[in-house]
Length: 239
Image (cartoon, rainbow, N blue to C red; front, side, top):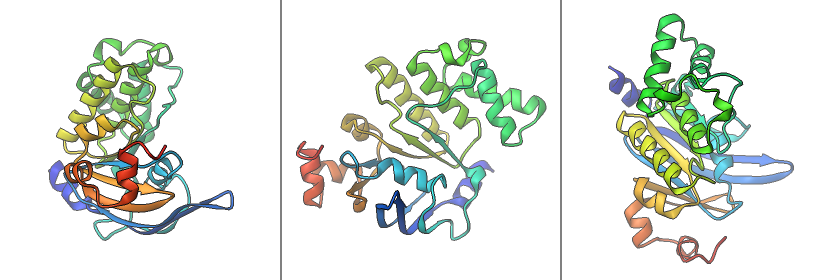
């Protein structure tokens, strides 16, 4: 039944999506469609608008244009987002997950069961009682992923999920992302790490200066990008 529901809420379609902040237009009339079953990585040079795009898709900042789910209005219970620097409550790892579930209306034993299950799937069960704020950077990022995953979102937005992590911690987060995708959640993420993008992405959204330049299958993007901007980016000529 869960997979059928996921098919019902996707695709997500953005039309003419624009964002203006502080008197400056950050995103310029982006239009694209995100179908079910794929992992989308948003790439682009520094300042291109990648994080702004994630926040707009998640409804955290005002935008012009429209975002629809399967030709209908957005369903906030179908979305979750993990930020580059996730905020941890002054509670245990388990309580952090339980709190997110409580805010989203999950009650009683079901809340406790789902929180435990999320930690186990993320390989964090042994840290359940530990204060979240004393965890390492990699453990906090994995806890943030578990907290979001416990909500059973249909689509999960990840903003630079491996930024500032050492290789071992980054590999653990990447494995968690793979498990989230395998469980049927649609992953949309930003990253500066091209190696991660190559391994994880099914498709690339490449943006530059707030404009959508390419939406391309990942293998095609890395082997034969269509645009000059993408070629320059992959060659290290754009920051």
